[in-house]
Image 1: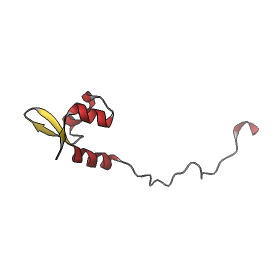
Image 2: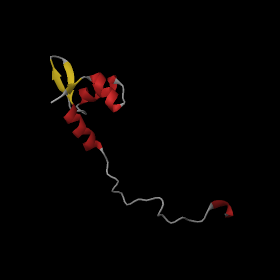
Image 3: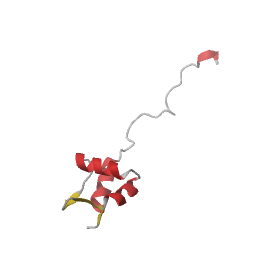
Image 4: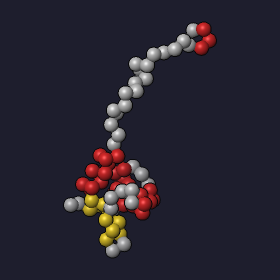
Length: 74
């Protein structure tokens, strides 16, 4: 287990530290509170990021959609 602080997680996620604090307060990101300090387990964060990932399983493909007539007579 490797624990990192808010500043490091903010850099990894490319967000402001205040955003990380807000996510932690709302329970939206896995964290550990030690004597009032918030720490993050890198493995938990990696799994959390993977769980947030959306798979492109949608059948929508704009390149295969039929195109209607263009406006303006063209």
